[in-house]
Length: 376
Image (tube, rainbow, N blue to C red):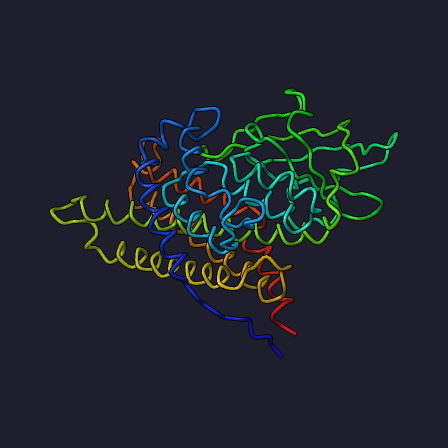
């Protein structure tokens, strides 16, 4: 006996308008020359471009109007992230949007009133939830214990995205035998607590963070953190799928541009079937990724993630991950020896695919959960 998932697909006029606007913005602000110029920078993005994104309302797009946002829903973030992925633009929108969703879904009214308006105004947040290499781990190595009427953290978090520029962190921990989320202001962390990591995708930035000894008030603990943690792991997979889908489209553009300009033995190499057929396969995989992505965006909401949304998020992440990996591999191969050099753009997309596959679970991880959800 099998379960049929909700296959609603509704690409709204609002999403279409956001996508067109985001495409134009990212193409203008993040051409490949700018991307390469930022590879060795500390931030990985230009602060003035982030300020423009804030001014356009991107940071508040899914935040309710009562907190200063536009209240267009979680699905409206997807076109923005897809466009950023297409142009390898790495401003901290994904990290901040996930932090906002954690507070929206798990926070108290006071926490929402304190932090959400700051996010709308440009404060950068991020999640610190990874304890080891397994995104499926159920227990956190980070603990939160009561000490002198305060809550004290102990433990490390790995590969915290945009940690060096974050204004606050939403940290997962074990508290009284249960999973929880707690908000930590960046000012509470000494510089030596952050350890910058070199990533395979050099457009990205992440740090390992030692939270040991950090004390917070009880008011920093999200009252519904355990439920919110499950939701944001799935939303993180969905946002990663959006970025991967955009990057896959960019990889296809890179391939087609080369196949239609490179001449070998007196013919365009794009005329050879050995190259045409894999290129069509990339197109089909990319379109499948986009269909699954916007199907998930059509049904996700501010409510707690139900089974249909979970299925949609996991399917989108599994498909987008593998599509980008395949596209990046073919891009390097099609460019021949030049594809393996640092100066070839193809390697940027391959590196993005290798990094993206492990964000919020790889394809194998999500298909293992899908089997349990879809097969009785």
